[in-house]
Length: 275
Image (cartoon, rainbow, N blue to C red; front, side, top):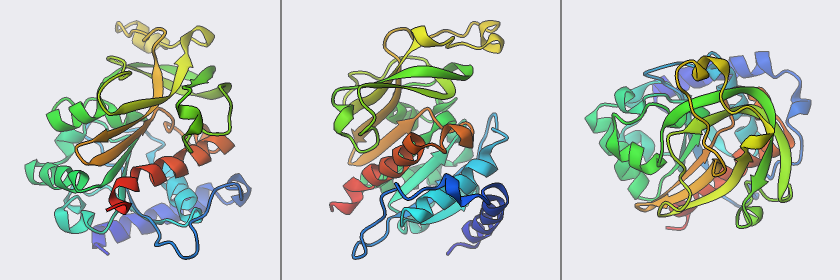
């Protein structure tokens, strides 16, 4: 294992046990990999080039524990040099944990390595601020389909599961609508109907205030009736899964949040595993 990855994984593991000593928060409802199935290999990457969420280390620890309990092999890195053709060949999925301004984190060679790996069937999972301030990298901007405008406070709101999303493992089993608490992101545009995108979950903006005070002062805007919060995209040979959840562990450590992440990662790995 790359020494950078090994070091960050060790630090993240220490944080994990410090912050999640009560293992009851990770219950047995998570689907485990079959005994005869080769474990999915996941790289959690959380370097930032713009705003850095203070909760990133705790979210890294949570992801390491959650995905490990689901039978995946997980490593963590914040070193851009780990995103190389050699290193990425060892992974099925890279989870971008609130990687703001990702285009400035990677140089041209690292961007090329990630694109070629993705086109070869790799999976990318974007969590919360993974699609914030990324226009510096046109390819990633096109993949994401939108950028950041503003966000809400940590509030309860009604989620609306798309009819097609109700059969997707990342949203299955929760009905056509349910209430959920998180801080919700407003995007520069809706990704509904973009090529290759399937929106799994929308949010009903009439059930909460979508723009918190700090962003109202800066001209932040809600998205209106068409506000996707979870979607998938099949693009250029790879798979992309995005969720607004994940600013903090409290928006993830629920029955829905745990299932959502595990199955999102599993889905993202599908293109690579089918080759």
